[in-house]
Amino acid sequence: MDSGYEILAVDAGSSARRGCLKTLHGSVETPIFMPVGTQGTVKGLLPDQLTTLGAQIILGNTYHLNLRPTSELISELGGLHKFMRWSGPILTDSGGFQVFSLAKLRKIRDEGIRFQSHLDGREVILTPKRVIDIQANLGSDIAMVLDECPPAEATRKACEAAVERTIRWAREARAYAGETGFLEKGHHVFGIVQGSRHKDLRQQCAAALIEMDFPGYAIGGVSVGEPEEEMMPQVTMCTEVLPADKPRYVMGVGTPPQLLKMIAAGADMFDCVMPTREARHGIAFTEDGKLNLRNNRFRDDNKPLMERFCDLETGQFTRAYIRHLIIAGEILGSVLLTMHNVRFYLDLMRQAREHIEAGDYARWHQSWIERYLAGKKEIPE
Image 1: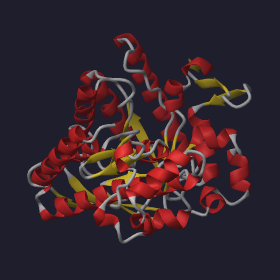
Image 2: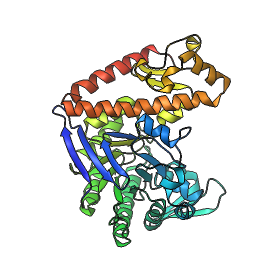
Image 3: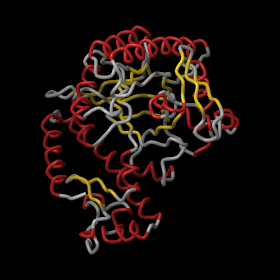
Image 4: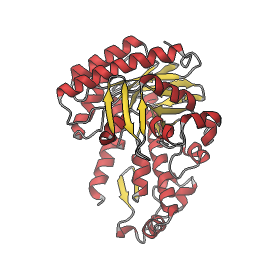
């Protein structure tokens, strides 16, 4: 199946790729970071602000949006794009991650997942077909299939069962997306590679999904409690076998150095709550590591968060002022840091694309990571 994805450049010294993915709501230049709007909003930001910051595509969540306000209501009101007034592409997670994060509230069966709603305790059932229906109601540009994401401490036997179930659900979802016309209308559906830290399971899962001919592929089950040194091998286990002509999406990661390393390994798309969540805790990302604005040393710091970002309104405020807002519990402090952090992540992806095109990504990303980590050691948290 045509993925709508075009490779524009490949770095000579790594597996980094520069590409373009066409969707119903516009093209996405990769590598790209997708700000997370789980409940139909990127916390604290208006859609126009996201555009100004450089966002091309955002993420919503099938499980949460179907619980509240329900996908049926969103469909009646014109779909998620109209509902939240975002005109760009939207990727929606299938809800499979809730198998991991809401373990005490769910039961996994071969036919799907039964949940107790974390809102009111009522039973919710997610099946491969139901998940496609929900995302069709939302009008997702990129829909994810239902999968099972085992925790890092899962046994080999549990991982094998999760892979078998993930493959079975993917096959059912892929067929149903074709039968209902969801794919033919131009929506993308991505399969999700599971297998935890086991290379043979990862590649077994990838091979089965490739046979199903999805428009794109995601790498799931990364950053679910495993040590950081195990994250990169899990990504490379997948990128070395996934099709070169289709987008590769690493779900739920990560820190700036992790993203750059994964790009070097051939990954294209990423999402993570880190930039927005850290902002709400008073943390700003910079090229020299993270700044904890709660620290007293910023009390009289008259510098902007980053000199290079002074062109936008957020860059006009000093570290001292933003620290004051955070300490005082003013919402504006979190909003300003959210804007800064989201821009930081998106600008990092812009730089990555430029250096892939220039052919010097391998050298540049290593130098960038060295600077970031050196600064991180000097800046107390």
